[in-house]
Length: 251
Image (cartoon, rainbow, N blue to C red; front, side, top):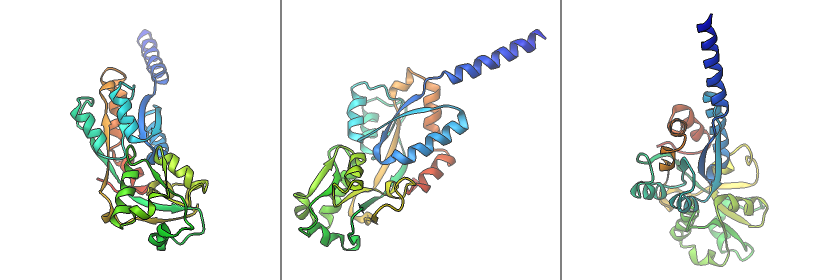
């Protein structure tokens, strides 16, 4: 009887400990805003654990992590920032590609995107939204696409820069910009599906958007087991299926 009571007490303690476990902090590239919601729900359904996401530009997260920001895991919109963290010794293991992104052009105005090259040159199109190429990988890809089609000069005076792709999406969604470049995962999300028109930019026009995840050194001293568990979940069949459904290509 005493053994049974001890077992019940132990189970209750374990359940309480899990309930009170602090969520791990995840730095999430803004292109993953809607996709990450699905990942977090699937992870909680599997483990009972929450995660605490912060959304923003990958370059800004890179700088914050370098300055000691308390993130356990970093989901970047490219490969370069996590690899730089690897080189700086700020990861617990080498970062890995979790998905490949796709660049699209999006508008909520009555514009024929099949003629998008003409639209860029059209004086009636005054504002083209792009994420800051200095800190946002999708902004960098957009700049590469404009250069590929010899449109950089025509677009130069029309570009309005979002701090991240999230702010860029706001410019497009509110029609503050006539059109803009964003991630395919945004326009096919349940939240944005059916809003406006979008066109996929041929992948030959920009460098591959290989998105890497990093298990950060901060996790080595804080909630290590939970952080590793979530990091490993990102590469599980369940998570990979979510990425695929969201419009990403799998590694």
